[in-house]
Length: 357
Image (cartoon, rainbow, N blue to C red):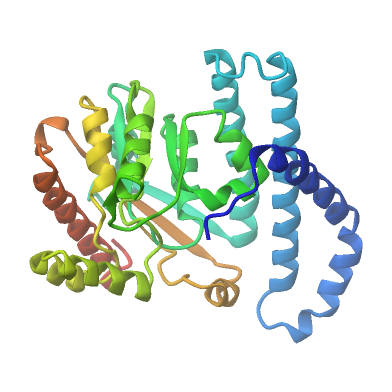
């Protein structure tokens, strides 16, 4: 299903609706809190129902706050006249960074999540964190390629880039996220691209070609403070998606890659088209690969519900590859990308065997 309400309907109906929903949910807080507490004995876990309802309320308020703030920016820009000017784009970046800090502060405390960043194999946390920060030093444009595993990992990555690494992300997202008014409005005012995932197709009227053209446009003109963010797997790891990916590799005559994909336990075979398009569009950009652990087992709503509160530590590992070490040509880059995802898989595997690493 690729249907999405037109922009005018999302702005005039969905955006005000989220504000109304936030007000109603907030006003009813005493009522739903009493009901949730009364049902606590019937729901296993540590106040799971209370936590979920509180997080829903917080997210609605967060969404509504962003919508109202961006409406103010729209008025201040001359009712949209100057929205694309650098000053207003910068204002939206500042607003988005602040909003993510607030959201993660609240969600992190309720879900008991911690995020540890590392840019080296050092077991000393301060050294590893300093190495991570050094990888994102604002000296060259970056293409950031991350694994996609677990709920909310894209939010965590964007928050880390935006607020910890001081990079301005150019984000590739699935088109369905435009149903969220705050995300929809914000990411139509800063460089971002909503895409319809389409597998391996390479036909002019759909599939990979259209997506790759859109990603090339987004990666064009990256500055030294920018980071083009892409998830080459194309979606969270699942049994069905992994099997489909391997089958498509075999159908394309790539038996060697299909066998390697079968051997990877934690990641899927990456789709190279978007990465190749971004590398061509940003010829001076280095690449940073991101691996992370902590959310791997959370693949369904049942998994998330069972784990609440999560009490999890998320570890994010980064490697930076200078442009001089990136091969030229689509085929060579496809194999290079596959090699890196095999390396990411091995890193995750090692952490599974030795949680202290």
